[in-house]
Image 1 (cartoon, rainbow, N blue to C red):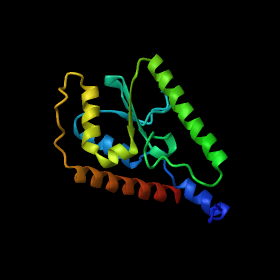
Image 2: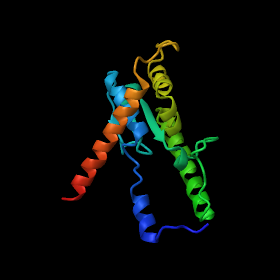
Image 3: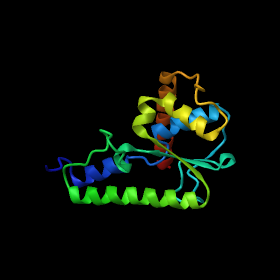
Image 4: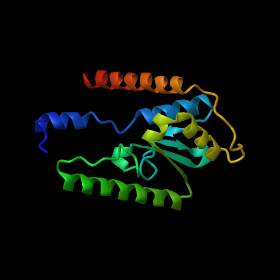
Length: 173
């Protein structure tokens, strides 16, 4: 199948794909902050520059996009039909890098939580509950998060739009 976009248009589209402040990240960060957890974001001092770092709990959280990080059995983890060789290599390198980063962090005795885009979008309360249970080993499994799913998703959407608008204003200077 032929790409219907020009090289410049495709390049422009790809440049708009964000690697930071994604909707799943914003949902988790907002929840953690509201729950009293304090964290760093994108800490470049650690291997893999984790999305969220909770030093007090010696825990890092990666918010993985299903497409880019190849979430097994997820409908979003498709392979484009054009330039298959390129994409196969790209995805293989991404997964390999993820595994290396995980090994390095484990050597440094960090606990690693990986959340997937589809899981956070489909059932944020369950994902957030799992994060809390992992952070607080003494919290019983039956602990439930008293937040409204729609409010969480709406908050993340508003925050994402704010960040996009702020970035575009800063680039115009």
